[in-house]
Image (cartoon, rainbow, N blue to C red; front, side, top):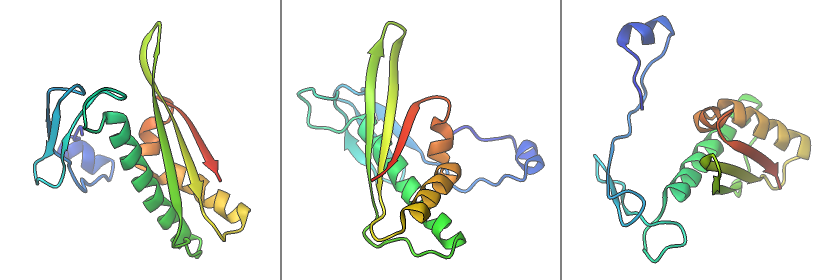
Length: 148
């Protein structure tokens, strides 16, 4: 995470909430990633390869969908709507290769059972505007968000 110089952060009214610190060695092929606090400690493998570890695409899918669901909770609170206890997000992150190189494509399939479809769509739209992962992906990754 790039941190703003203190004077820039103050000028923009920004405040640092958290910095994730992870050390990765070995890359996606038989690598390891461990957070400074030890809560994340995973082996890495190439998608579809012989290794038994996870891969960066799975980690991105997990992080984005968790953040998005929390953003939906904020949106629901603002709208005075209860987020269903069985809300779920199935995240899909594709690793693609074209002549120009590697690129990502991603989908979130959001399930909000029991909510009126218009209310559910409003929560999804609000969350997409609030979620920092969605903001980071916007304009950089082909993203589709489906209310299922």
